[in-house]
Image 1 (cartoon, rainbow, N blue to C red):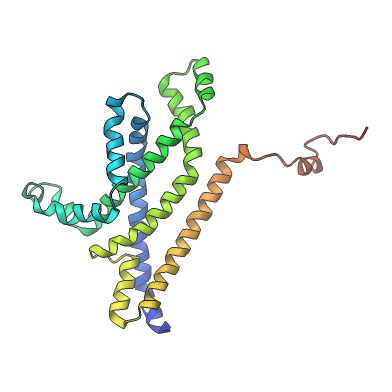
Image 2 (cartoon, rainbow, N blue to C red; image 1 turned 90 degrees about the horizontal axis):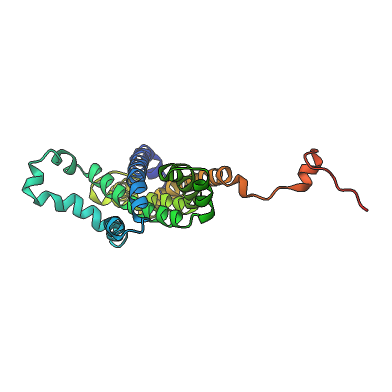
Length: 245
């Protein structure tokens, strides 16, 4: 193994890691902003309201992310109206095209996760909120959405990991992300095993941090669902100890 080639190019890997993290975090933030209204509209029973959001979800979940990124990066340039518009300074840059593609893609998957979580809200919770005089907007803000976010958290954690792994496609359109850095090292030194396994190690470390962070998040949000440890509570005097007989 040519370890020296990897050590000499560690700054390139760290730079690529920074670009990868900026792409993924930016896409997740923009995707969540889009996903919340789309998920809400898709959960409405009126077909005139849910038709367009569900069509968006179906379009972006039913086509590969690579195709979507190619359409945005290569396809938009063939339209003269776009080249002469104010959007062209953004669409001509590979970084922004990848960010747009990632954001639109993760928005569709996140919206579908939220839609399913919203529709699984217990009807008793909604009835209880109505019985105390909450308006429909207040019910969504204080009951439905917080409950849906808790249920959607494990699935959303998987979506974040998928988005991290999918971001490797950015290296195909000239972006020097983590995968792009591995390709450069391989082209310079002809060490495919060392170059790509190093990139894989970085992805693995970031994935571990994401999983660990979501575990802590789930532990905090789902604390009320964990059974009480009666033995521990009795030891610290929080519960009375039952006497035999």
